[in-house]
Length: 255
Image (cartoon, rainbow, N blue to C red):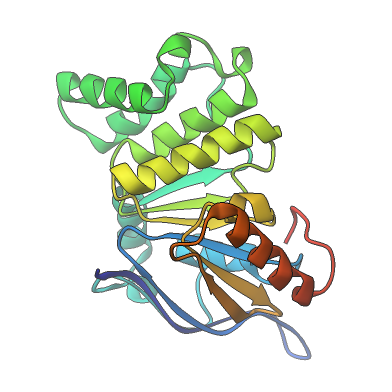
């Protein structure tokens, strides 16, 4: 296995002078190609800040983030924009679909922005809709489908250009339990069948139990790491709950 993502000793501060908050405190870790990694922690632990740094939405105060051999902390804004477009896929709790476009058009738009021939784009869109079981709702608008179908469309849009890393921020937060389970099984399937590398921030132990490895944050630091290995998901879920009991405080959607 090879490292796709390497985070080296990063820090993130907000504010200045005597009013400084350290959101990320000397965090280092690696993600191998094809891993499904979860990030957990109590509200305010730094989960969302970390995701924003990895997504190039925010910039580190110190340290380095490498995607393969590229140090994204050294890239210009123009280079970052291109990197974001070609190498990263994003799935958020809010779906972020365009209501004036059909499910199919939402996915096609992501492909059109990448460029390519019409036939190739249409085939890739059709393949992704089939993979994520969206063919029956292809001509419907986002307001006409369920939350689970909207989120699967958001996944299709994020994955259709085959990004090197999929970043998911509380992707099951707005879903009912059945839709959440379907989405997580989809993530797990994409991870296994496509070798998709996924990093998911979640406050939910059930969601995290689908991951192969979990990093637990507390006060901006990684304080524990849990590997699933060959364990069954039920046992892994119990281990996650045991670790969360040590983090203190209630977990919430906000960070």
